[in-house]
Length: 348
Image (cartoon, rainbow, N blue to C red; front, side, top):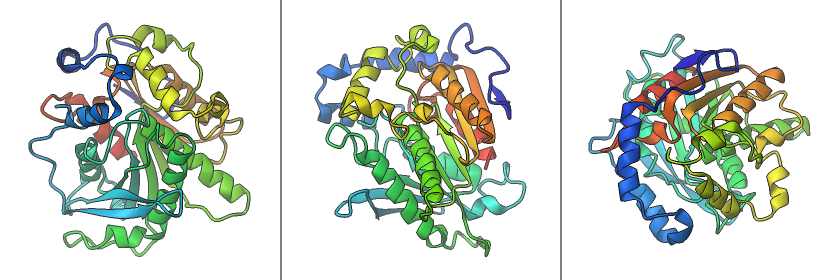
């Protein structure tokens, strides 16, 4: 792993082979596959993703409390399911320098191509993030495509973040004797893959609102774990890693077709943040990229574009890892996924 305050990659982009644990998971998933996702019914696809052994965790990481609740969506008539993770009082001790991570609320958007994924598939990921950072994590189940294409998931992510900002102190609550700072809680948005796309969109939306003189949440940081941020299809990593590493190019095209109701949507910066002509005045970013991920190069490009726009960037690159590693924490696991989460938690 290379980690740097320089947005670029200082070591190799890609190891000779993926991490052995990642290879083992890929082999098991290939045996379990129902075939191309375009040929699987939506209900079966979603159920299979949640039931994947990489997401089934026999002993979830303990929390002080876990609360299921509803938060407003982008449509006033819609409520979204959400889950609040309040870590134990000693959470984040290894990473915390100044004691204020326990006054941080992190809003999390799950990955899954905007189509699959849920609060349950990313339950352990959110638990680990809460434990390692000391932050209260609020996982949000935004409406998914194809029933709800762009821009509805973005509207949900923005509305949910705004609600969390307004209720941050209550969401942190009393945690096993923790004394919460009297200062305003810090707010972080985060996600993996398609969820990182939504987190980046929230950052752009909040900045645009403030520039227009409207109220918007003040974001302390954005955590973008192998984000999808570009409409381009000519990245080298798409050719190098587009088959056999857990996220194949035909599947990526299918996910995109479900999410983008019109091809012109792909040019909107809230849909593909790398399309934004102005990336200034955004919150500091932690960006994760992986050597065997087809999204690797666009993630690197986004980190570099943010840095060139004056945004503080911490880039974590894992040359031997695959797309999805951070959520592969279950019966079939990639232990380095927990390392990724510990590393980004340290940025808080």
